[in-house]
Each structure stands twice: as C-alpha cells, then as structure tokens.
Length: 114
Length: 117
Image 1 (cartoon, chains in turn orange, green):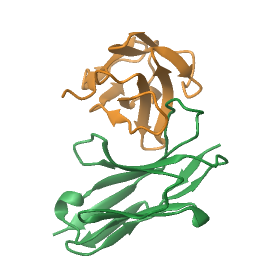
Image 2 (cartoon, helix red, strand yellow; image 1 turned 180 degrees about the vertical axis):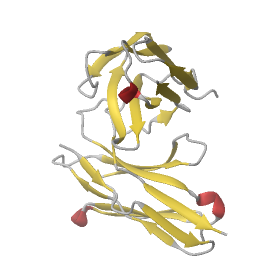
Image 3 (spheres, chains in turn blue, cyan; image 1 turned 90 degrees about the horizontal axis):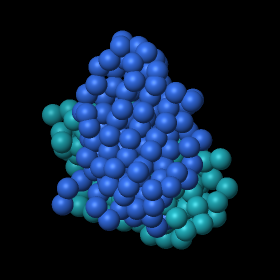
Image 4 (tube, helix red, strand yellow; image 1 turned 60 degrees about the vertical axis):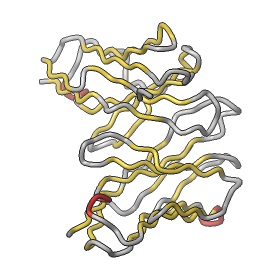
C-alpha cells in the first residue's frame, strides 16, 4: 500500500516567493496533519484536518501560512511570502480519525528559503 | 498544556550494549496515548509503538522494550543488544484526549542515539 506522499522532496527558493507544499494521505485515512521540524524548535504541529475540515490551526506561525484540504486525497500548505526563517523540513502525516491511532508520516519536504 | 521531555540529547554506546531512552510527559488529561517514533539518517519518521494510559503493561518486541509508569509519568524505551542500524533520532510523543477524534501529537525534542561498531 502506498504511504503518505509529499511533494516536492526538496524546494529552494528566494525570499518573498510563494511556496506550495503538497500531500496525499494514505487512502482511507480521515485525518491529516502538517508538522514542521527545525533544529531550534523540534517537531511542531502546524494544523490538522479531520474529514477535510480544519480542526486546529493554532500552530500556524502567522498569516503568511495557509493550508487547505479540498478533498480526502489532497492537501496543500502554502507560504506567501516566504522568509528565510521558514526554512525547515515540513512533514505531512495521516491517520484514521479515531483518537490514539498512530500517525503515518510522509518523507517530508526540505524547504530552503534564500 | 501538554509537554514531553527527553532529557538525553545524545547517547553514544558501543554495539551490543543495552541502552535506555528516557521520556517524561506532562498532561492534565486522565486518558491519553503515548508514542515512540524513529527518525533514521534518511529523515523519515517511523512509528514504533503506542500505549494507552489505561494499559501499564510493559511491552517487548524483539530487541525493543517499553516501560510505561503512570506514577512517574514516564514511558522509557530500551534497546537490548544494540546494533549499528539502531542509530537514529528517537522521539517520544503524546496525544491528548480529544474526546474521540484524532488530534495532533506533542513531540519531545528527541534523543540522538549513536551506536558505534
């Protein structure tokens, strides 16, 4: 079975540009999560969706970040405009929508903002 | 508020030694789930185990074992007879009681485990 698929794997762009990260969850999983990993802050939850509905976006750093889930098989995380401090590895994860189910992670997108 | 503390930033042992990774958590919830994930040098996050707060039985899976003690809010992970392939960053994580639906995880900062040949 295919796991969580993220694209692109690597992204290098200049400050001020719009960045779009993409995620395809595991088929049948109703919950989708976006995390960010940095050396300073570790792994932090940005936002998550249950059944395509955003439940908690309190981890989104600021208005420059937005996330959508237009259907059960696709989600995007957008940064506009990007800044060097946004450089990090962004992970998408999915699980069933029952409490306590393990989350399965994609390989991550390594984002570098110059 | 939830908090997970992994006080050991880095541990280095020689192959075949046993090693224990510590995890201490804080939560006001009376029910919760705890998890361990492995992040090898290739960067992906691999699920290892979950434990419900109701279940304090220790668990063993091959060379891996987990000791959950609710009284001390700890969920420690032991690797027996370590191997070079165990070298990775290991994360402990907590899922609060969200009232039935899925919820985001609170991760510790991770322990970088180095197994030297």
